[in-house]
Structure formats: structure tokens, C-alpha cells
View 1 (tube, rainbow, N blue to C red):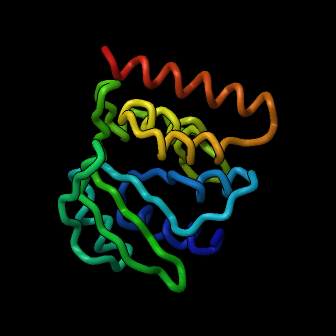
View 2 (spheres, rainbow, N blue to C red):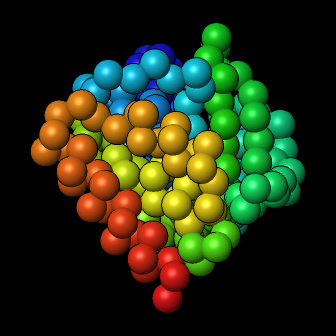
Length: 161
């Protein structure tokens, strides 16, 4: 999985596309315990087609549901599933979050979504199932967990404004 993340990074950098790693793959690249089923890549909406091309994915198509909306392309790089989202917006009872507005954290030469970002998005969307999954994925370390929850609460509060 880590080798494929590095291959994604090389391809997107070569294409000049700003991107960030999200989901459980971002946790794994931080050295946290995670078992990613795929690699979640986020780019600006305007970069979605170029990013899909650089990764050898099909052209992105608009998808929405459950409060999530993006230009999305799904495919494989080697033996790993890649899920590319361009211009991801999460809306729900908690307001609206634009994925690319989230701060990024640098780790080992990669830009990663903050640990609590999935929890913030689930909270804004009002999805109990996504919230439970995000809470279960939080690190066991009490300090990291507390920081992630505080980040999620702050980010979700900003969406309500």
C-alpha cells in the first residue's frame, strides 16, 4: 500500500497537480494502525480530470449522495483501489464543508488530511454510520485522539457558520 501511495505522489507531482491523501491510507502513512481498503485522493475540482489521467483512471463523473458531492474517478493502480475525489463538498444538517479548505499536515513528504477530518465531515453530514466509522478509526493514543476530536469539533463548528 505504501509503495502505491508513493507512486500516486510521483505521478501527481509530475503532472503538477496539488493533492492530499485522505482516509485510512493517510493514517497508515502517519505510522498509525490502519488497514486501508483503498487510497483516497483529494484534488480541487478543476484538477480532477488531469489527476484521473495522470493516475490512469477513467474520467471523473459527478457523484452525490448522503450529503457528499464530488467529481469522482475510481480505478486501480497495480493491485490497489484508488478513489479520486475532485472538489469534494460535504453538506448536511451541520452546514457545508469544502474538503480542499481543510488544513493539511505534512508527513514523510506527503500532504495528509488531518486525523479528525473524517469525523468532522461525518458530523456535518449528520451521518451516524460515518461518524461511528470515523470514531473507530481514531488513534488509540489518548493525546492524538483528543487532538483529533478537538479538530473535528472546531472544523464542524466552522461549517455551521
